[in-house]
Image (cartoon, rainbow, N blue to C red; front, side):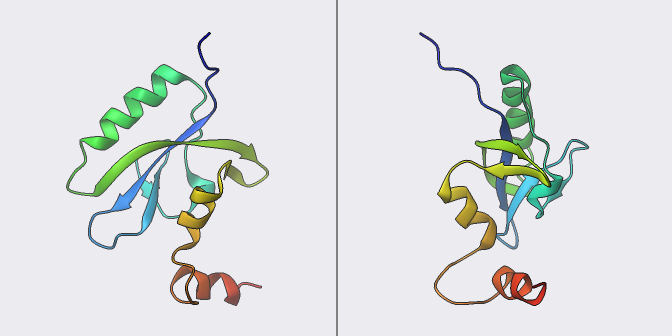
Length: 103
């Protein structure tokens, strides 16, 4: 029996900075997961991934990741993606410092 398709987001790493980025509905790369396009159709997800993978001057390692719709946009269903969006966890720097300053 085929597996049921779950909503996806196209993600990758920015080529120059290495930051985690997400593809938006208007074909921009954003570092903000809440702006990412949540794709609910499997065929469209595959096409979006192929198109994103061709943008080698901007990103590296594009892939589809499972997400669910949340109050503020897509939310990860797996802890790995939750960790990726906040950056390294060994000490506070970069995104983690920015997140602390908002609280």
